[in-house]
Length: 231
Length: 340
Image (cartoon, rainbow over all chains, first blue to last red; front, side, top):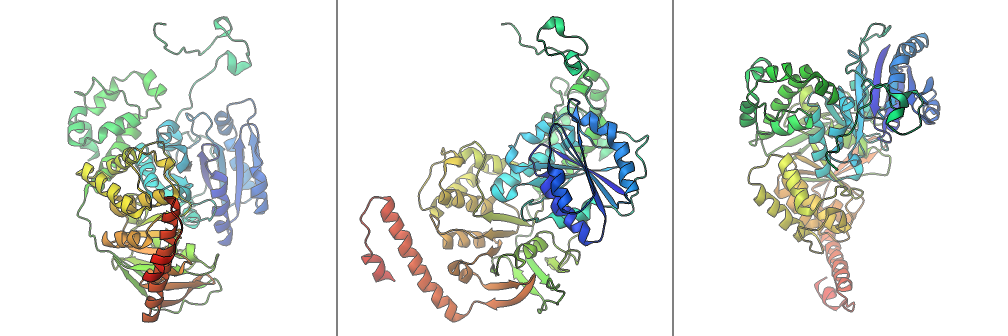
């Protein structure tokens, strides 16, 4: 079973792109499963179910979603192998733009859209910087020039990545993406002992533990203050 | 190059490759005041807290920098062949029937219309061309560019993208003026003589648009016709893609004949997906798509060209009426009916 991790900002088009891509995998007779990670709510699993493929969802609730992802990925891989999948895809939204769920040696795809603004590639950080393939969506509604400028900005943040333009509505580019992300020679039996590409930020402060009161005396642990200068 | 980049000091890098400055800044590298150091020693003495804070991975950064410099050098190659050609070799229809043609050859400066009902496979043909299919797409077609199939690295390269697209549904979304926008695009394309190029695009766009606009107009405030005119002029002149794909351009507020002439004069191959008889007849050929495959190829006939003349006269009449309305005049058909 090959494992593909897909992430990207909320509403960038991850699910649409995957639905289109999975249709092509199915036409080639490959069995695909999806695990969708989200924070508070998702009903994207219903879309995947319509494709008649095994799907699971994980909601992190009060936990940091990316930390939740890493804590669960080993079990998710085991689930995929038990289902005898050819391809297991995990989909997660990068919610704080600092963490990235990518794992060394595992194909990493970042989905980002043309509407998000030209400074977004710089803001997204490791999730974009260390991806193998960057999929740019919503190109059908912005001008050619904006697409070109946006692509350049992505390229300057991640020059190594293959950049693909895929249309989540018409599916244009999804077939090509399906040929790029799946490696039939690759078999991921377990992730035990594998490593993340980037460390996730250290944060353990009173608020991580459920504190709701505001003020210095309630703050312990890893607390940092904004430099406001003289007021 | 990997080894030797580490021996450069940061200021040497910046002198030799000025675009490295943006790269350093985009990656949040606090290099200012440390320009005399090599990258290696810069990272050695960089505060680990900053490394964590700004999410810097020195090893990955150095590798990316090497790739970036190589990539940017490709953009500088300006003597790319301007004349290009595409050759389409047949594949199959949805039902497996083979397409009945030997090959279709299209040269720079040619305009080809692509016609067929919705869902007939027009997008698939355009995707095959964009991807330079090599018998590895659902249709099994093969596309040659300048007489040969592309190498994998050419297919995935963003600096050599084959197809630029223009369509009805495209809008400007950035918050900037016409001039700032053209400057940004020209800068990203690393063009020499930027001022002149910007002026040329601006002038061309204004000849295409029914209504003139100024350089300090925010691009999001342009009318549909003005936006389309600016997009076409900008794509014709600044985009390096040899093929322009047009998905139905509406009539309102833009001179489509001039627009096509401009694209052709910049040696583009123009592919138009359209059901508009004027646009379709402006093409040299029509590719008819049905049931997922190319059904036939029609050369525009003499008779059709005469019909085009009449249609264009009708079109001008409508344009003039629109102009009269816009400037508050009474509508009159007299002058135009003489011309037609």
